[in-house]
Each structure stands twice: as C-alpha cells, then as structure tokens.
Image 1 (cartoon, one colour):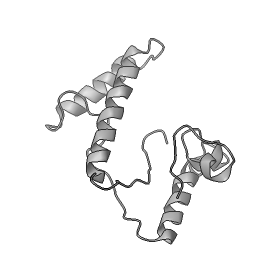
Image 2 (cartoon, one colour; image 1 turned 90 degrees about the horizontal axis):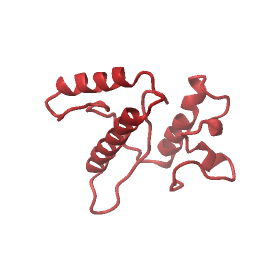
Image 3 (cartoon, helix red, strand yellow; image 1 turned 135 degrees about the vertical axis):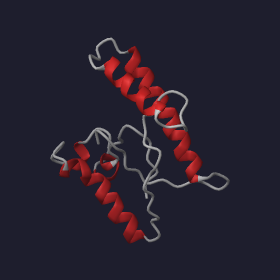
Image 4 (cartoon, helix red, strand yellow; image 1 turned 180 degrees about the vertical axis):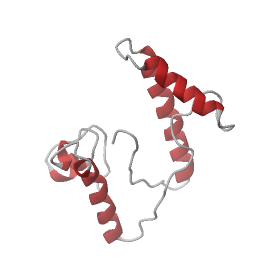
Length: 127
C-alpha cells in the first residue's frame, strides 16, 4: 500500500518481535530517506525530507527524521482460521483500494507466492 504496511510476523526463539519491528522500521526508514535524498529524478525530494525532519523534531524519540509512526496495531493470530483470515485481508487490500484487479498482481504483495507458481519480491515462509 502507498501509506502503510501489513505483515504477519513472528520471532524465533531468543528474539523479541517488538525488537524486530523496531529494527525493521529503523533500517527501512534510513534506506528510504537516503534513496529519496539521492534521487535526482524526485521532484518532491526537498518537501519530503522537510516533512520527515519536521515530524522528527516534534517527537523526542527521534534524532532527526521520523518516517514511520511510533505505534503499530498488533493482533495475535492464535488459530489457523485467524491466520487465514488475516492473510486474505492482506492480499485483498490492494484490490479493495483499486490499485490492482487481482491480489497477485500487486508488486509488493506475497499473494503471488500463495496463488501462483512463482516467487514474489521477498522470501516468504509459507504458512
């Protein structure tokens, strides 16, 4: 999606899911901001960097920029039925938003890994 991310995640033994999410946000925000800053084709570069700096200055948890919101909305998936329902929700989200006609056509979705005989952009551990 253009303004948020859905994922189903778990932490292996010895790791905390909250720490993994924190590190994911830290790494991706740094890489995205660097990519925007170095992209000579991006006409909104100065405005976006200014927005991230402004948001960062408004939040004492940040050093300079804020890309992600500080919170998330975790839902424990304790049954296979709940897992299937959430996975379907994630896959159908770009369809409901009118971005694509079929879930497996959304470039950043794992739907292709589940519905077709090919792999998507990221490695997926199938449920």
